Image (cartoon, rainbow over all chains, first blue to last red):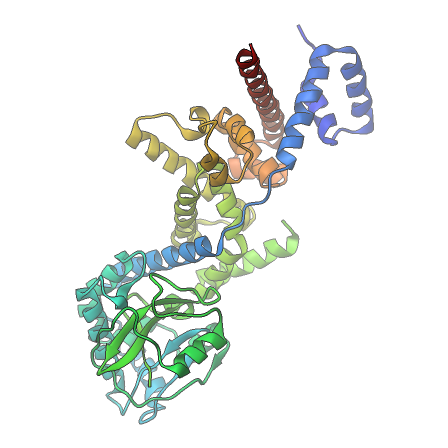
Length: 277
Length: 194
């Protein structure tokens, strides 16, 4: 029976043996066939494993992973919000928004675009309705350009929550987050554009409809070319999922979901409508 | 793993438990490649690995409150990833009523896709597929993902001496499998020449 310590030979092969242990291992390897074979096996394995490259997610895999996790989290959150939040929390978001009443709030959140249009104290409700309508429309036409995400299950979940969300969605969705919180999360935030359009509904645009030149310029300036013919998600530096385009009163609009918004908002309110002029 | 990474993780976990989704996002960004790597080495398929990585991070999201902080966050995370992978392999096995891929389902020797799927040399991939799960886990974490033995021991919940022994034995079996492939290949070539 072989009575040498093969683990010691293995430790010697990988270089983790002490000098005394190494001396013993060398003696065994020189005089013992089993130890010699063990040493050769360990060296062969180490050489083979040494060639292994570290695994890195591809850009597409990374985007998919982020999206799937976000969507699952959003679904979780949606499932766990059986009742609207109490009024005080609703008021917080309203207060932030009515501060810019009669103005147009335009945020570029990272690379995501949020353009709620408010015209007074009822603005939040308008936006809620707009958002819900938008999602409802999208949910009724899941194959439309407005919903070109690869995995539509999240949007189905969005749609499932519309009735509840329509009552006070932005408030409910934002929870304890204020606009300042969102701003801090989504830095850099910058003013991009302004519009007085009030989005009330949209219809599907031709898949190959060209974007207006100013939007194309904006998109080019952001990152890789963003074309309106892409299927599924288009990722802008890992931050935005571009879902599709549609027309609104003859105007082409784009639908966005931004990462910061996805994290901050529950499913249902994170479909963002951007009217292009 | 550096101390600063561990400290940063601890801070992010605390922030996440306080409600910061941004903190969760940062934790995921910091570890997603490593988690995916572990999943890929075990699942041997990029899509399956992506599913497992997704499930891993969702488990972290849902159960972060159960993380006690006794070990590094990454240790807990890798344990979740490893367990998730083997859970999914068991589900696959139940569905197909076939063998576990990492034990007795070697890739097609002629298949280039098997190589592309895990970015390993085909002979190494086949040799790895012959290892028993406990040896496979040890070699994936220690030799392929480069985790310190102490952390591998914590991830797998066994003493460090046991892990050391498993790694050595895994390497030995791996080398034997590689040698056998070479021998078989030479024998086939000899038959063809004759």
